[in-house]
Length: 88
Image (cartoon, rainbow, N blue to C red; front, side, top):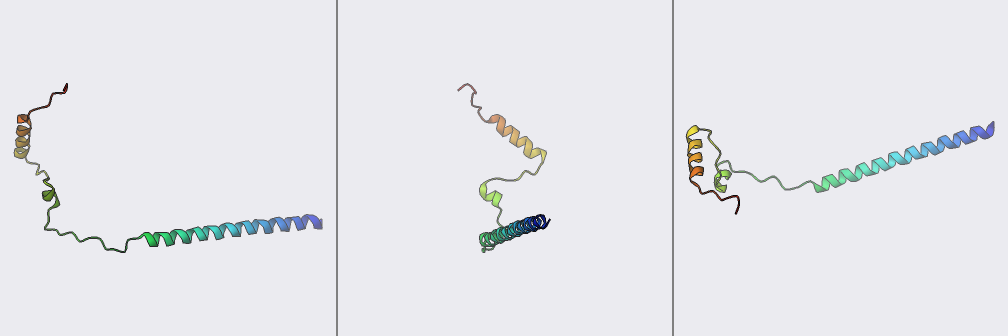
C-alpha cells in the first residue's frame, strides 16, 4: 500500500511541475508579446491636418452636391463623349 501512495504522490508532483512549467511559459510569452508591442508602437505623433486644405480639390475630385442640374450636366457630357467600340 505504501508503494501505491508513493506513486500517487510522484504523479501529483509531476503534474504540479507540468502546470508550473506551463504557467511560467505562458507568462514568458505574454511578456515577450507586450514588450514587442511596446517597441513597435510609433513614437511619432500623427501629422496635423490643416482643415483649410481641401484634399479632394487638390486631387481634382469634388464631392457630389446631389442636385439634379449637376446630374443632368454630367449625363449630357457623357453622351457627347465618343464611345470606344467593344470589338476593337
